[in-house]
Image 1: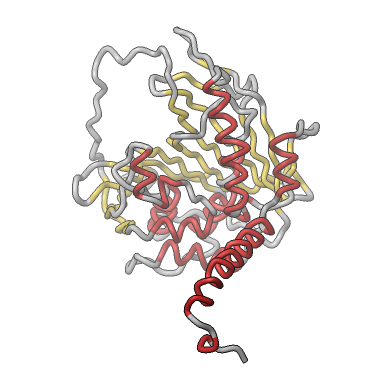
Image 2: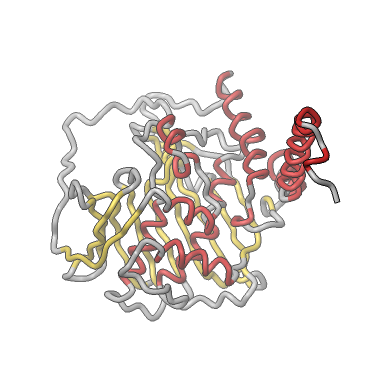
Amino acid sequence: MLSLGDYSSSELYRFLPQVGLGIGLSATVYSLNSLHFRSLFSYFFRKPGKDGWNLDFEPSEIGWADRVFFLVAGVLNKTVRGLFGGGLRIVKGQESVELPSMNLRCPVEVADEQYELYNKALTHDQKDMSKVDAGSMAGSFLLATLTNQMMLLLVVHPGLPVSPLGAVNVRNRIECHQHPLDLTRSLTAHAFLGGKDNLGRVTRRGIEFDIHIDVSQTNSSSTLVLRQMITILAHCKTKVPPPSTKANTQESNGHFEEIGKVEMPLSAPARWSAVCGDYNPIHVSSLLARLFGFRGKIAHGNHVVAKVLHHLTSHTKIEKGWWVETEFKRPMVLPIQLTAQSDKLDGKRWRCIGDKDDKVYVSGSVGRL
């Protein structure tokens, strides 16, 4: 058996670079082993088939090696092309823009391990939250969470003439067409954007466009299980003039009552990222978030929505299909404590206000299909 005592200090120092190189190579090999190279190469650099692109991995399986690939093949590619005039050109008076039609499909599976991570993300910092019931609204919301990263895949694609840098999710609508969900069946997710029937909108702050994600049974595409519509704002220069009068930003109090607390500590993004794979720099690093203009790293919007739905479960009984709409009013810089409220008159409207400033950070509504 070898002993460190058998070597002089000079010999040990000579070994250190070799050890470091070995560790570095091992880490590189491990990362590349998780890279879905063939599928991603086909997606980024080959023309789509008749029905679009088909990936052979799930959105939640996107790893760090994949993200490096996105950065080089997608983000840097678009940035360089943008420097030479390869981006969108918006003329004065233009109200809409036709983005290229893009279709992407991939398999989806909900494993027991993902439910455990999801439960931990919702209840770890919440003393008033019990374990999530798989048959509740919050339980079904996991499927939306696991397919949300298809948004990233579409936004970074070099064929979409919109920069992903600084792009933000401003609104969502999620429809659960089967409640409770039967997750024992094989599922397929279909994400699409653009085309003549799905135009982007020119706003004062940039381009707004909608990404649709339909989850259906694999053996029956007509059997819709869940549908998402994700609205993205891509910041860019437009010729839309500012409003002539200042908008009324006062929030209506209505008839809201508290239904629970939403605690979002600095560690919250790490737990949510483990569920959905969303490692956007603005969520995982305070320094990088500041580079994008935020005061610190911000909470995942859907993490907050999932906690609100968990609170709503005990206040709103839904036995069949349901929908939830969400509007993100302002970034939630961590750490932050929010109070979830529901309209006591109809129970449909909800919102989250900051405990320190009484401002509305997230609002929305929920109902039956």
